[in-house]
Image 1 (spheres, each protein chain N blue to C red):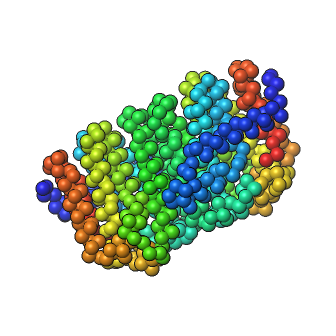
Image 2 (image 1 turned 180 degrees about the horizontal axis):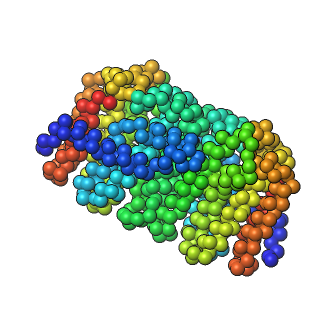
Image 3 (image 1 turned 180 degrees about the vertical axis):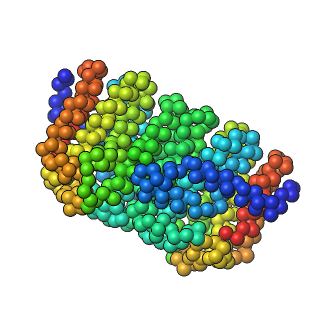
Length: 300
Length: 300
């Protein structure tokens, strides 16, 4: 077992997050690029902070296999643009109707609904423009990442599919199987794809891909369970978004289906398993294992 | 000059349109794929008919250069998914607030706003999943098409940028320069990209690319001028959408800025030029030239 402490990991995550932020700032069109209103809105939501979990996982999965850091920062940041698009659209009045995100007014509250819809569309589009840029790694490798990412955020077991189910299940009785499908689709598939993107950009072998995929699946599910728990147990101040909303909207969540304590145990077990999967890499896996453990104790 | 008549072209377009429809039917997830509600909505909007202009241009540009028809049908159909996404989102209450599209209720009227937003997102995402599928042509060629398409539908001189300007200009005085920028971004860039995608999939040379790009730019602009004219002169029955809306919404249009007759002359001149660009290909360019002329006399 490695000994990277929670404090060290928190510092590491902050440093990595700043590097992602810098890369995002470079990748986004400047605020005064014509037409400025859309670029201001895109930058507002992307640069509002956030954990940068997907890019960090992509970066670290690739670094574990000695991938090129600059390329990994780039692909990871493209994935963060996709994540932000999904948040902007999820927050819209017709969907979750949220006023607050990352401690600031949501995009449609700040810029109006039409700009929010188009800013989300634009971030998704820009992500694919970035993922298809000329230059290394080989085109076949980039193409595979685009294909996997598009599938992971699509309707067939991917993010949009999960969002559809989430909206439909609100207010209904949900069993544990439906709940696991929902979370696997809504957040799991994309987190898994982020880890795999790092492996593919580093041109890792099939065994690396299998191990890191398993890691990604386990922490993806654990992340969502903890998210559900924080909605019950967290404070609005620490989360930067409205709390207790899942319950008021009768959303399908782990605490609602399994209870708080059982949910906590499930998340902890997944994290232990995720760390075990990476043991063949020895100390080099310390950061990814540390991130996994940190996800369990995070307060936002 | 070639002699493909308007009638022949209309028959050709109908046949090609049916082949595109069949390909779209194959590419879209079946209506009963879980979760069905989103797949029903995606199929509803895509399979509602339409001119299939972008896929047909892609197909014919590629066929001119002896590209593989099956591949061209596939990439062209992916572009039609993107076109449909843009229509669904443009029609939303927060944007153009349209009730009717291709003679049927718009997506949000038929399925509700949340499903319409997600169905648009899903079609855009699916298009990139299809464009990045394994198999021929070479990965570098597919990657270039993805990159160009993403740019053409983005904010920087592309479709979303045009939509932003369109919304902002409504009700304001617009000069001819701003109008040309608006239409070049909103429809021109994507039509140009569709033609180029056909050339790139057929692995045409730089000279082919330059000629067909020029053809694409000219017919793209002519197409939009005719679209503006039809909104003034057409009937709701033939168009399958609300007419006179541009005027009521004080949209920036060619007839509003230049008058009806001058707009007709501009469109006709562009079509003549587009046909001339393709003269080096002799009779083989007959279909693309016929399509160009047909765009001028179309009633919907």
